[in-house]
Length: 214
Ligand code: PRP
Image (cartoon, rainbow, N blue to C red; front, side):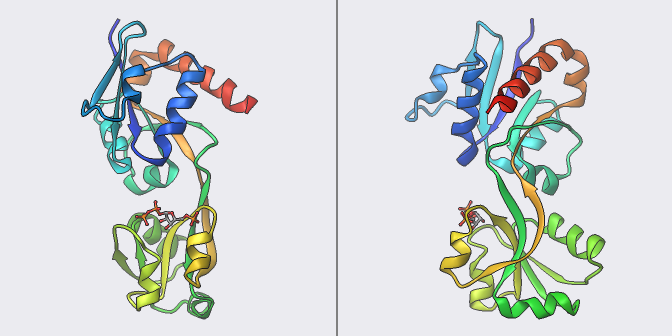
């Protein structure tokens, strides 16, 4: 039997993902050791391998088949646009992709004005403004703390993830438009899905049952 490899997202999603896998009997003790510098972890008994990577790299590993299965946010799947199967919504990591800004920026959206949009998600923002709203905008790519942009005058609005809304509130910003809901998803390499169909569908079925019970 060959190894099935999982690419997991480092950070917020990692803990929840490991918890979920544990509930379906997939454990990886050595992964829990926070001091370890090891990058890849093995469960010999189940013939599984796991590694953690930055969210945007997860779809890349899965598309190329370096990982058979990935667990990653819907935002990253949309932004990366890789060729993979999205097979399950895990129902955690729930948040929303939104257009946000000061209340005063609402008029620019209503009048379809040529505004500047700062975001970590240029593809999602471009698709939303150009294809869904037919509004020409200038996109500015940032890498974090996106909420700063309208405060310091870099852009009129931002496209960003809103979870609790407290970052917006504490900075005098608000949700102006909602683009789509987000959560953690399971993605699968299309070739792996064919070659290892039984093992993969069995695992997805177990996760699906667990998710529907929660
Ligand atoms: C995300 C997002 C918002 C914040 C939303 O940033 O970009 O800034 O969380 O959460 P809230 O609605 O609960 O306040 P993250 O903390 O991941 O870091 P980043 O700003 O570096 O992207």
